Image 1: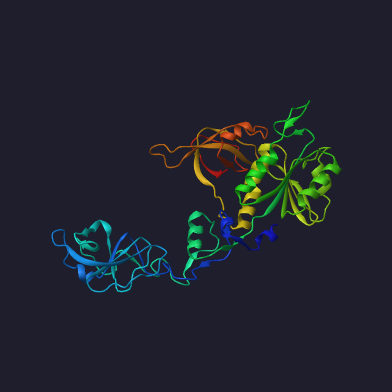
Image 2: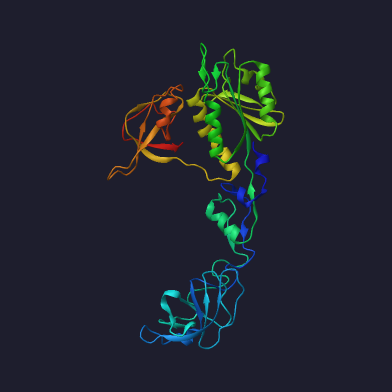
Length: 392
């Protein structure tokens, strides 16, 4: 269904956040790139300060200073020190760095330093390969890129990465009774929520929503909306007009197309569903009741999209019902519920249903964070029963 979205694309690093890496990123260089100081202090030879202590400091001649971004600076010989800053190259001849807090300026002035503690070879020095070596896999394919991944890529000099492209999805909500939120309602009208809800859910799955449209139940208006939605989309999702009524424009326009399938599914809410194409673009047709549309998306479409973009699936968690529930025979019911914080001694979290089964109860769904699945052959469950709870 989303074959076009499965190819990789190369994006600038700044645009890769939250994308999924398509191929492993291997280090093209050793990191650190060069021997550098881990501390502000003095680069010295460890043998010259082996016996140093607070009461018997080693006195070394300061031959220069090196800052981050400088070259390696002057070499360090016996009884010499070079002042270095964090990240600065360590001068030739030095084998350790003494932190500045273990030193003080000699009475002889800035040309000499007193070191009050010994250091071993390699202390406070970063060497190439300490972090990664050439050829190491730094980020595996399939990883969803966060800030820490971009930091690693940038440190390797990568200006961009090969990622899974975000599927481009158009959304069309249908119904002559629908009015955009914020506009006044006429008789029999309601504020439209499906396009906003589905667009947000699609974006959360890693999609790019190219258009959101509200269409009435007129055939010409709906086909025009389809034309606009499919223009540059990999997928179009519609909401509404898929049942058996007289004004089911989505079903009327799309059901007769080659390969189309429209049929009720034995689930509640979310029975009527459809799958078709328009101008070569797949069209997934969800029911129009807002709760049905979102439940259908979460149960049926979200797993497909997550797999297409390379993101990890969202699995149900086990929970116990907080109260008795009933369910219609022959249909899988998805109850909207809120997970209750763990109680001391409880073996599983509790899931508390927040509303009845009606697909019109959209406002109460705001309190839900899971869908509790009641199997089709179960008509009632008592409080405390163990259930699957699918995170919303």
